[in-house]
Image (cartoon, rainbow, N blue to C red; front, side, top):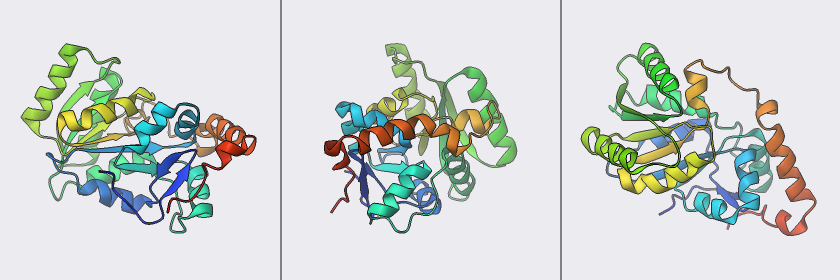
Length: 237
């Protein structure tokens, strides 16, 4: 069942949870193996896809948490309902802070990334920067997931019982993976976009105005020129 947070709002038909960066970290710190949850970081590009793709929109709306990961969404949320929002939830920061604070309760982490190099470098970097962090497993995801890969994912999750599976594949397909595999792996899955590449140093942190440019353009066109779509930008009772 979807978690409910005060001040939820609907943007392009997608339910967004009005969580601050600190509250987002706290929400993930409650993750435990055996409790399946789906979490997505949504920016303007994500909701622009949902605006045109009802199946993708339904996928996001069936999740447990949708974090506002762009300044544009934060502004929209403040205008509609979420007065508590101040800053966007930056995927690399959310991942790093959760792993850092998760050391005390002993959270176990499973990294699922785009390439062997990125995953290997990320694990090494995190172990160096966060002594004591418990990274129990890693995998490289290639879509579509083949039967052998599916079996390997299931076995690793069953053997190592991760509390959080971080999925950083920089493609919309990561959201579909999170939606499908949260119940399969029986734990919290979080789609974090380019967080793996940024935290590992493979790519520099993106500036908000450049990363959101394409998504904002699509978002603005869809919401300002089509009144029917504009009506989707409404407050959720």
